[in-house]
Image (cartoon, rainbow, N blue to C red):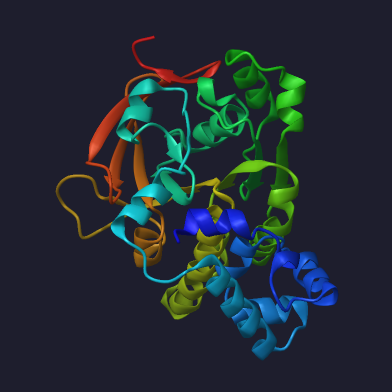
Length: 322
């Protein structure tokens, strides 16, 4: 039995065998409302949040995996799972093309670049575009926008909504905004999303930026290991969220100069190996002439490296030739 077939058979925690109403209530109150949200979580994490004994949690998770048939699968099953992935248009056909059709669900897409390269603009645009119907490149869903630097602007949402034919007020109602004031707050917001997402038809989580608080709070080499460990756990939470609810996660990241590079581009993304390996798709942004920006896919297992030129207009992200 493939994962997609089995997941349609048992969806909610209360449907699992040997889970009584009291246990189901504790799990659901902690945000584990679906079987998929439960099986991608660590038992220690579930136990801590629910107060259930670790042995009980491990037994429930093991039961859930057996019911869903989570064993070895064929490459054909993997292909069929990939077919459930959906995509959100960026507003630029050229950028969509290098991304394989748009921003994918079930993974993390990272945009990194210097100040003014378009990272925040893309997050704003996607928060609007996810609301479009599928025939127009959206998912008929809502967005969560986590802002760590205070760069969210409702005026841009209003202009971008008008640009794609959406009612600005309704578009803003469909974006759930939270300002994260430090790394612990940022982490707790993401943890809360496991309960919030399925109740609110959220299909996009935008985190702008994923590294700024970690970078500020853990300076110097003496704090590097602790910072990377914490950031790694945070990114894996985001990955589990994307996979459990078939939604798109988009994060932005800063860059820093490498003093040992004398030729070519001396900048590199903040976050080291942790961020280099966790996102499914990594895109570097850089400025060009005027309002033009260049996006380059630098890492994606299923996409070739490629570049796209787009522009940032008053109405949002568009193709350069428009």
